[in-house]
Image 1 (cartoon, one colour):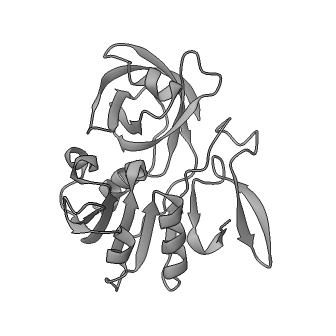
Image 2 (tube, helix red, strand yellow; image 1 turned 45 degrees about the vertical axis):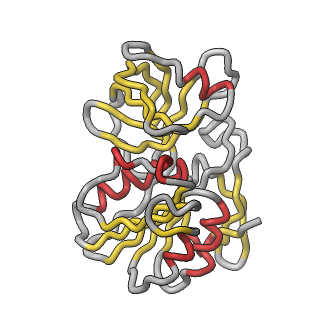
Image 3 (cartoon, helix red, strand yellow; image 1 turned 120 degrees about the vertical axis):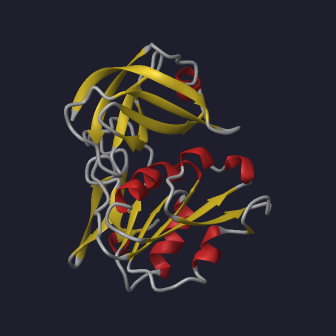
Length: 247
């Protein structure tokens, strides 16, 4: 984990609701799928956490939606401006090799799955990406990796199949590993449906400190015959689905 100053490379609209922020990679450590960064934003007391959507030796990308004061200020950052960032934070998805892979998600939860799918491509030939969205205009088409089988659904039927992505996912079988990220209700359904194969989920609990100090983002996790609270920011955000005790 490092605290560095990075220069904005670009900060542009990805679609109507989401933006893509790319900044210099001034970190000495490598990032892995599932890791996130904590960005300091002027006039905001708390930093804001963002999953890493893309990483290379020169730059890092995040995807975000303007939902409040912090992200509104972030959306006004322009090329050449500096931002204060802590990272890499959190754990990462385990990478399986030579498996039939399922990736499923929706909303801004797609961000860590983009990074993940790029890494999985190096080791697997069968990767199916189930992508749920409100409508065609909300899909992150321009940043989706090539060489992957995508199955889309939209609430209004404007692209792919009309309906919920989980209902489409249920019609497929034979997956050997499942990865997911996105709305909590979707993750709950995935974890309850898939009991016979490893399922890894990236959680999006509200974070304050982002470094495991405040215990503001805990989730109940099964440990042997008992349970204990785990910190999403420090012990996660990736957890085995069969270990999560949902609210």
